[in-house]
Image (cartoon, rainbow, N blue to C red):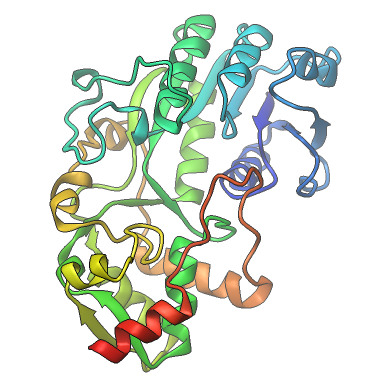
Amino acid sequence: MRLLVLGGTHFLGRHVVTAALERGHEVATFTRGVSGEPPAGVRALHGDRDDPAALPTALDGWAAELVVDTSCQTRAAAGNAAAALADVHGYAFVSSLNAYANWPPGPLAREDDEPTWTSDEDTYGPIKAFAEREIGAAVGAGFLTARAGLIVGPYDNIHRLGWWLERIGRGGRVVVPAEGLDQPIGLVDARDLAGWLVGMAERGRGGAVSATGPTGMTTLGGLLELCRDVTGSDAEWTPVPEADLLAAGVEEWVHLPLWLRAEEARTTWDVDTTRARETGLRTRPLEETVTDTWAWLRAEGRPPLPPGGHRREPGLPPELEAQLLAGH
């Protein structure tokens, strides 16, 4: 079938393209054309999603039957996709757990029992929730809302897991959050998510799904231990109490990627993913994800952050790390 990937040259979109090609689809990508081209054999379409004429012009009669949308970041982009792609058989939309009005900190029950944002704020969660409604109303029963959580794996240009791998790989004393090591974490490998998205679009399977790893799959400490094993590092943890981290200006999720304050961490990854498992979203062994991510980083190096300027550089600044290590 003719499958259009909105996005397709960065992280998740790249894996969606690979999955679609492996399943024999005729694939096109629609991007701004500023961050690389898709693989050979893929139709590369370019344009700005916020321009209502861009997508119809780029398609130029090429009628998509399936869509996987990994790149909707604005209300205009959602409206334009709804106008141009309402007649497709299946449309898999990558939303976010942030579309839920109560997350974080959660916990999150079954998808239909949780409210989503209805405000007009131009922030990430409300925009994703708006896009779900806008495109879903146009497409109808074949519209899948995949509310993704933490996505990791090779080609991850957000660089949260990648930062930990690189820092732990350098060895020595490593600042870790004392109370945060037992913090539960749920995550999904981009390759598993990509294959599932393509399959759901093929089946025209609609509805909302919390698309992340199962509750209790690991902890932050367990993930960091795995990073140490995979890198073969001699890194030694230096646990710093949460109060000291916050007093020093350490920002959760940014300076120590994946770390949340204890009050939030207790429930944030308590997400009911029963529907995701029932519809076939697999969770490969975490060791495979970490090993493959480390191999990719060593082979190709860290990619730049996504364009747009709204993301912060992840990781603990060296001077702040030195200050914390000196005090502990």
